[in-house]
Image 1 (cartoon, one colour):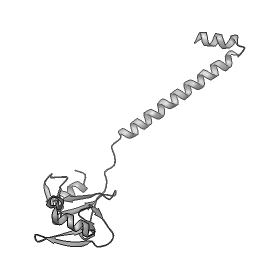
Image 2 (tube, rainbow, N blue to C red):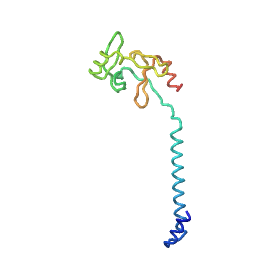
Image 3 (cartoon, rainbow, N blue to C red):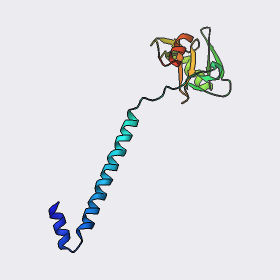
Image 4 (cartoon, rainbow, N blue to C red):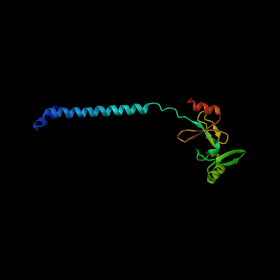
Length: 142
């Protein structure tokens, strides 16, 4: 650092300007570190629990796994009523039996979508629960 100051002084630039420039660089470095630390701490903070609401199954397409404002088309298979958005969804549901099931996020059990309690997250994602008790447990954040 002494060499830099000496070289600049030989070029005719006063030492006071050199010291100010170094202070500015240090301040910028400190500020950058502080911002990086703040961003890291904010990213590490736990996310607030998402609220979940019960969805009306008649407004859910069980193929797209999405809730809609209007009532969907009912499809009766093996005595269970499923709801789908369109005829293409109906064909998929009829031909592909695994599409009729989901996994309960609390119990980990396979749940028939026609008999499940359906929850919708604020993001629009649907979750299927085997009972009102597992829905309540999920909603409570447990």
